[in-house]
Length: 209
Image (cartoon, rainbow, N blue to C red; front, side, top):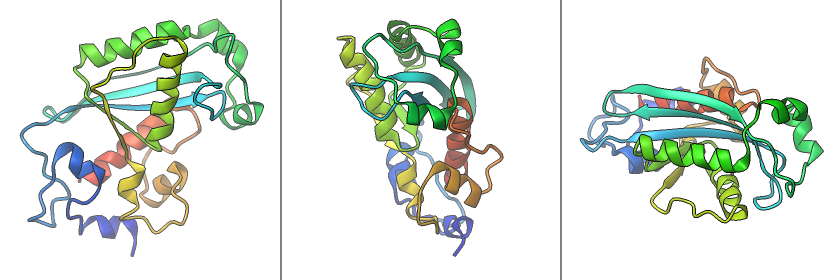
């Protein structure tokens, strides 16, 4: 069965229903949000590698979505300059194709990134982070906080949207690229943070119905 066909029979399983609430009474509506709608922070990172404490963030992109207004409030992207103790894994650089010289010229420092992240959380009253393969992104942010001896916000909850698509996809490999092709999103991921977070947000909209 095609993934989109499976979504027609959505009954509120998965992490999305945990986050915004779901009705199991009507199949024709994928998700019925509860009255306690939330602002969600969608994010994606490009990094110098996969190690939480040894590698660092190169690019950060985000979308803040208001469930009450059903609209995007703001979105943005920025380069983050690797700190002196951050290792560069050149196999990762071959995938994201980010120019390190450009990062050095245009990027913000890790401490500036932390300030920006905390300001987004505070200004928009964020309690929920949504991403694709979310443990990786959140752990890399946590690692950046820890290396800089700054406390990560304890109230934040993170959701990996990929896990919801285990219910509905026919693919054998749940990469963002494979799922966006199967569900025919307008934005296709490119291993750059803004395109990838926009693709993730489109998948959220498809899943929500």
